[in-house]
Image (cartoon, rainbow, N blue to C red; front, side, top):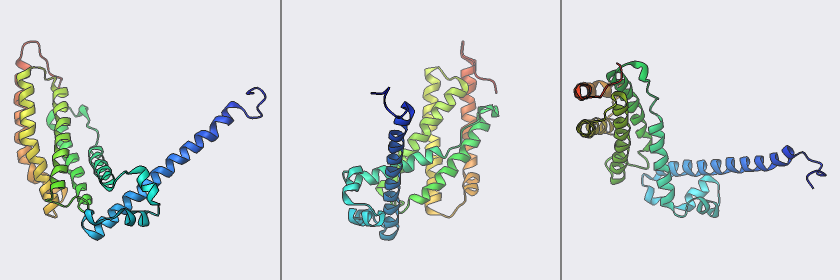
Amino acid sequence: FIRNCPFRRSQMIVPGWRMEKETDLRVKKTKRNIHNAFFMLAVKKRDVRKITVKEICTLAECGRSTFYMYYPYKDALYEEVVEAALNGIMDGFKPLDFELGSWRDVSEEYLRNVLSALYQIKKLFPIIPPGSESFNAFTANLTDRIIAYIDQLAIQMYHIQTHENLIKIYALNRAVLSGIINEAVYCFSKTDYSVEFVHDLIYPLFLAYNEEIEKIRTEECQGPGIHSSPV
């Protein structure tokens, strides 16, 4: 059959691939419209609990059956929007340049990236009002993700291997970084402070944090058989 077919194999595959691609694009467009409709209604109503599926579908120009094909219930849409926001903020952190030479240089750049990304949290106020239970849960989740990243960064930079110093790194990050992040979130949610102003406000605490990191690094360097990466 293939030998007698008037179409080449590549020609037979392309239409199916194109259909799949077009379908995928339609899905993305439909879901994007649903997300946008959800945000617009949240801004208007100021309470996501008052938004109905009917209103979302009308604004997104899709049928209820289409909505329920993607979201079995309204809260599933809310959860997807929040998760997308979390991922978007995390993706906003620019890649770190380990060639900068020292933990202080790398982490200072990362502080600016974190603050710039956290500033975007303002866009979420319509669906996650500051001070609400959902807002507190969101910031706690975000804080955990940032600290987990910093844990790995510090360990990789200085090849931390001893159990005692690992515990110190984890404890220090949770004690200091959580305070820095919470302070930044408070400033961006309660004031009109700029990223640079908040950076200058937080920087003294950040310097003290770096000094403690350097102490742990020194202890690790002095340990038997443990060598740090060059700085």
